[in-house]
Image (cartoon, rainbow over all chains, first blue to last red; front, side, top):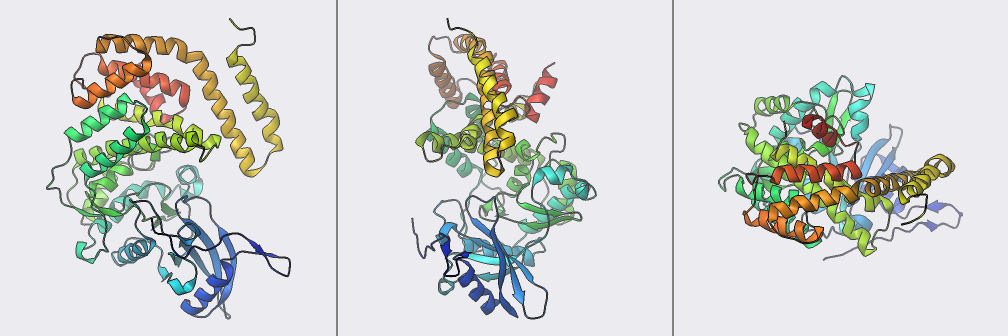
Length: 350
Length: 125
């Protein structure tokens, strides 16, 4: 585990007696150097969500012009992410840039942090107005006109994302279905509690794995509600590229269909807002590969199992004492949600 | 045998206290965590009411399926091992019925409002 240029996050008290965030001064210096006309920053605040990365919102003041609204995405405390599956933030910034050039809606990256900036690892990007909270997107009137369009837009966006030229990509791990299964099987076994439904799903996934010859592309890896910035006009930005990898493009189409991301709208398989048919049509019309619905279902099963395993291992942090919150404890009692979803997929009763 | 009130009734009373009396006096994160705590007590209450007889049924099904005796933990481990090595699978008579019954019980305790659970209950009628 490499840790470098960690930045002290504790709030210090200035001689004026006013609490000042220690990020303020280095961030103001960075924007003055890299944003034309910038004079300083205001309204710096940490946004909730994104446990693995820090996300800060701030406004750049400019001489005589409108403020520029930005986001700082930064490793916790400025250190590099130690998880094996997450891409470095510099890679994430590069992928967002490539995606933008491929007409995938993304925030423009304004600056990738350098060691001299004194802010650790991360990057600065535009702040896009919109909503990421699924319950609002799926229920509020503001998004009523957007909802019927979203599944098709998701298909179109994924087609463009998957067409990004492989030779233009930064180094990424390659993770076809078989290696995803091995990774999650190890995690499940290490946890130790028996889940016969998970075993059945692992067995089914091994027996039905896509052939080794399946064509690989860039895969976003976490394309779902929560990581899509939505406005009344539709999808405005695809966020959180930290799980990007090389793999089966059908993975992204299956993941967004996992019932956990439908937030109660069980009959709208794509994110709780649309149909598979709309997403598939959008995908093929925007130049994506021919859809294989069986392989999309395969990835929906794998995605459901992944989320189930993740819920069970939340218990580990609770039992070890790392996180004694009731919230953490009760997430373990949500793995059964994925078991009923897996049975509905693999052994339907009707 | 313990005296009244029952464990389920005690847990229910504490959940009611949190929701009706403590939560209105709390704010922000603390109020949110109080809601989560009350929901956790609801899980405990349902488990106290449902699990004893459901676990007896689960053990009986597992013994029939596996042809051996053991604790619930041992029997579940054995089932997992046999599913993993392929000696029991979707085509094995009784397996899917057993998994459905066990899973629906888990959801009835853990998350009875979950969309997938409600739909599965409707489908089974």
